Image (cartoon, rainbow, N blue to C red; front, side):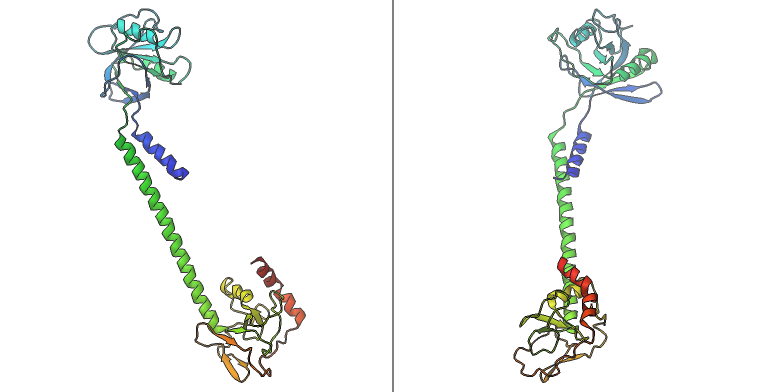
Amino acid sequence: MTKKAFIALIMVLMLCYGNAEVIVITTANKTFSFVDIPANFGDRLPKQGLTGTIVNAIPRDGCSPIQPPPYTGPNWFALIRQGNCPYSPKVYNAQLAGYRAAIIFNRDSNELIQMNGVLFVNKIQIPSVFVGSDTGAQLSDAFNYISRSTIKITPTLPVPWSYYVTSLGTVAVTCVAIVLGVIIRYSYVFCHRQYQNKVARRRLDKTVPIFKYSEALDCQDMCAICIDDFALKDRIRILPCKHAYHCKCIDPWFLVEGKRNCPLCKLSIDANDSNQISVGHETVSASNNLPNVVVDVSECSSTENLLERSTISTADQFNEVTPLVTQHSNL
């Protein structure tokens, strides 16, 4: 699985995960939500959440007996400040005072802490949650019972396995589709290039036929690209300008670079479609319609007037062919 796919999976799972929140609904029907963490002791919040009204605990730290709610009626939530004593005695004091739940806020930062308890944990029967410092300040000043705001504490809902299965399945199908798309794309490009190369090679073979080198051929005995002498039966191409090259040396010039002229004299190979090369007593046309023309002249007895020698001097040939020699060496 790629890094991007893994990140996408984590994001999907996070969206499926139900965080515990403190939701505030004001009298103007405006809604605010704050993230909290339920305590590891006491009663659990119901699945539908718990609705009530906030009262600032007196004393604020809740380490000693807390004053009861202003009046009876709604579910009262005690807002208690962190510090001076463990969490469980604070919640137990809120329970003894008649509160339905306790909200403890961080006095120093917005860090959320998982509350654990030892004292009175078997006696605590109300739920409690922990919130950050800024959340505690807003709940205390703007959303207490005097503002008549309604507070709803929602639990951390477990995520059904169906969400994970659906998310994993979606990511897996997406990855498979991407991989198949890439494979199909590259396969098409590869096949298209192979077809283009095949067509280009057939066209080249029709224009410039292939010969097997023999001493019977009246042509230069050295390839001007690799500077190697021709060996018997080497596959060579003789251009219309009568310059000869190894097929492996000259073919990249035509097939890869897309050139259509001689690298030495720059004469186009398409300049004379009726160009003919005499081999012994026979004549071979460079415009032969056969896809691959190979002429074996090793058994020819006559060496007269096979090919007209080039009029370009050897020094000029080497100077002009130097870039192509470098290219061939890199290949």
